[in-house]
Image (cartoon, rainbow, N blue to C red; front, top):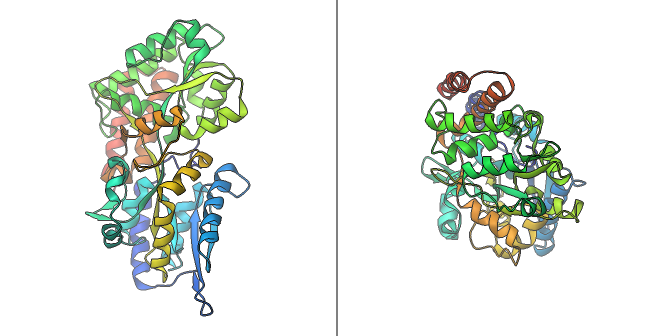
Length: 421
């Protein structure tokens, strides 16, 4: 799905330092770029997001959601501003320094704590307690809204990774989807025939390319902050072996998640590790393709990678009550049931009807096994994940031994974590 869809933890230790400086300026000034009109009690709210422009599927789905709110709430206008994902953090920080924040910000789940610590978003604990719906959310996702024991955001949507598989190819080989990582390697090898590969995943440079390896590391009982371990050797060793043995194409080192989807859709891969983002896309673009989804294999434990966006209210807004009403409305189960299929995302809460779609039900089950970074690891997650991808690049593409690749990555990870302020 790429990082423009909100998947990445695009936060670094350097950004946290900038946030701290922004907090000082925010404390000195107020204001907002929203307005409350005196005639008729009309309210105008500003909302910033990074999903995409209105002419893109992701942007259009979000705009439709906002339009629906406006239709149901006479007198409320929401001015939506799209900021490209790569510019979103910088723009938010600059606006915080100038006291010109939006009323509502749709932020990456992994950045919530840092934004709260910097005074950019406000404490919602009292509102959440009165609301009484916190216990409806999956635990890992809810943890991304917390800072110092307080709630600073509400989950908007979530995403997780699972195994997509070509039903025809597996049936012809007499196979069912793998349930262990040992089976994954065995089946991926068996399904590779020189023209196609058994498994595809993104291994591109940067944090996106670390996702599959982190999932494997977690399944082995490992910790992404501590990769130079037995679990790290198991995970990286298996991925390196699958690439060297032809079960996985060496091209994964240059593929983003969209590329992986295309390889699977074109029959060049029998299985892929990818997010729920591509459910509707595959069905619409490749109606003849016979495919399905299964839970990720397990090892020491079952695990997937959480991707989540949260909705927060800025500290400078003059319309906090109206902003909260928008957020709470967007989290109504019936609203989410209509919005999520169009958005190609999952509910962050457990009471949303998935209808009769068994594929979405698999992803909803997978989401309950999701992992997300916390604390210092969340603050430095983009750099840490990039270093983990670097270990895959070095071992699978650069001829470095697995122990040496892990040792080098561990030194870089330790440095990144030590620089978190």
